[in-house]
Length: 505
Image (cartoon, rainbow, N blue to C red; front, side):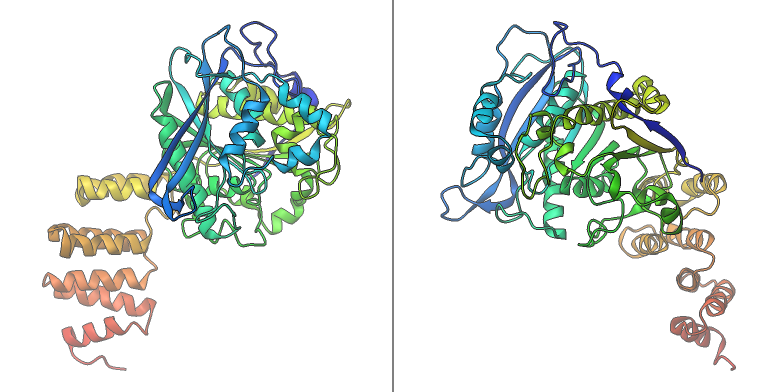
């Protein structure tokens, strides 16, 4: 499969960002707001299905969920929030409270005091704009756990017609976040909780859902994209999912299934983290391995992880050990603008079917007046129905009706594994013994052999199904086929001896 490559420079910065309602509104870093005022509300609730240390330290309580929600609001003369409002919420998110290190170490005291007094674009509890809007859930990153780390992108997307919701990143049983399967799963569950809450808001369009993941949130977002059939687009920001991470994540997660990763995906990461194409041809990255749906691999010319966060737009002037190797500098702001506009173009193109910005971004040439984003684009194959859809079809419509549809899909997607062998085998057992649908169990076993003709196990199970119904000749034929595929199949040997007498060697 050939990749279509487009080199996008700072011309991305010139892509039209619709002006704010007053024509002057802009976010930190110079991003123009869209046609909506970004509204903001904080939802304080809890997930009663999970526990967390209680605030008084005396025991356990339901897991606290503080959900930051930005949404498209009507024009208003109400006062905008101050940056200090976000800082104060951050101080309430974590125990014990402390100023986020990127701010405390990234700015001198005078610069920090001035920043805290500045206005942001959001208006708290503003009246929502007319209509319903796509919902995006944002997964936060390790060492960038506060929603403060990504508020600029959230406000920007809200001003352009998106509901964006997120929550602070906390570990499973304490504040500390570990890079392991348990804490990735915890972030996935947090993001799912946040998505459900945001989708219930009256201004949300729950049928249009997207995910954004930064750093560890990108790992969690990928798992969520693989297991939530309702998600329509996934944007990952500088996270370790392109190649194998040294921790083994996210592939170590039990629900990491690349065949389920079918939705549009844009991955923006440091250019140095992307291996040369020749190397990737020999050892494919996730970008090459992903078969279905459009994918965009964006080479961002920076070595600073912080350039993918709101801190790039805040005039960071001091080195931040553990966050960035050197001050982000003046070049970080226009680069961050390009990242934000790429995000908007991506979601417009795939959640709204408004491909204007996306196509313009892909057509944009190189620019000589500053660093550029290089984008590799792969259209991807059309995806067949998911395994879940086909199993649900068999379960609800019956094997006879489902068989005809599956044969049509099989003809359209030759060579594609439509339903895993073990799933069909297990489904036949359910039909035979637990769901009272014995007459359909044989049909499921027959379908399993058709879809997996090289599987001795599928033939063995079908032999059992024939024998249980007294179809001796069919059972013998099928058991013999199992032994052709696996001469050591003990069940087939024993069954054939029972049906025909001892097998001659």
